[in-house]
Amino acid sequence: MDQEADLNRRTDRISLSLPIQVLGTGGDGRAFRAEARTVLVTRHGGRIRVARELAPDMEVTIRYPRRDRQARVRVLASAGSYPDGHHYGIELLDPNENLWGIHFPSPREAASAVGRVLLECANCQAQEVACLDGMALELFQANRSLSRRCACSTAMTAWGEVVMAAPAAPGTAARAPRAPARTLAERRAEGWNIQACLQSEAFGDDLVWAQNPSKDGVRFLSERSYYEGAKVDIALPHLPGGGNVFIPAEIKWTSGEPEDGLILFGAAYLRRVRKATRYAAKMEAFVGILGVSLRLTGRIVDLSMTGVLMETSKTLEPGTNVRMGIEMGVDTLRTVAVVRRMVPGAGIAFEFAQMTQRDRQLLGRLIQSFKLIRP
Image (cartoon, rainbow, N blue to C red):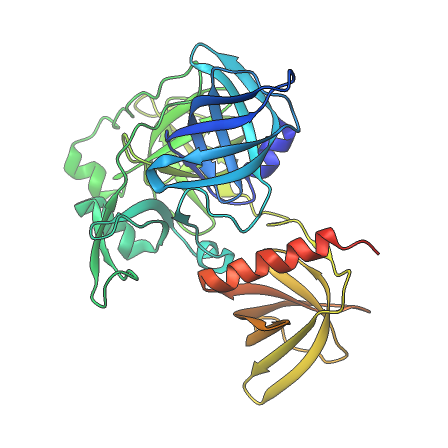
């Protein structure tokens, strides 16, 4: 469970029940194929439920027929056995593989989001986790759709919520939030008009009313008695029957006293210490940097799917945006990056801020080469 929790918190978790197939070889040496479903998905894997028992560290192929995609994954650990089957955490062996066909936001985009929702283009059925600011959240609350740009068209296209089965945690059932004992107009005037969902080990799924969400956290009303310091996952807004995007948070304060049967809480989103595994350079790989009145090169010290540490004697101010190129033989990986910090005795730590799908594939190949080459 610790391994799975670490996996799930690298990126946002989306509660989705997708039909998949698990293909592998059992302990008896016989090949098998088992019908299964996802419980939740992440950029790097997710959790699945399947009738067949699987072994930790077992490598299998997951096939997702709807998108005609498949990928090799590693079974991390059992997440429990329930009437609907055995639950397992899985991790993609290739960190660049997009098994689910969902575009996840960059860390920079996600950092300033007030709400997050899984949306689908009405034209081409492309799916992505949309990071919503305050205005976009209000528009989505009112219309359950947004106008956004898509690669399938030069014009703005309509994006709506993804409606499919999204099961609650095993053994739990989400209850509709009870409105405060005020009129609907009074409640809306006070800002209690956003429905959110909390997940916790203590209470399972808890539908609540939220107010004044920000990129750092949210206030909410609940009948449950959460204690200060409790770890929860929050989906805001909550979509009944849709793909809810959960992010980790911590209860920071509580009014303690119920009013109209509801207790007021404040929750802060947890910042991830590490967004992706770093790999040390085991071959000479160089980085070129272009910026305003800036041109420099350096050697890669280590690399991840979210950033790079570059060895150089130069200094740059944190927050500086640059264009970066990494030579890979006949190919060049190109990305926009932002300086996060200077590392004494090492160089500059950059975070990737904007990257095309092609360049992300090149990044995955480069990381794989670092993993395979032996010193």
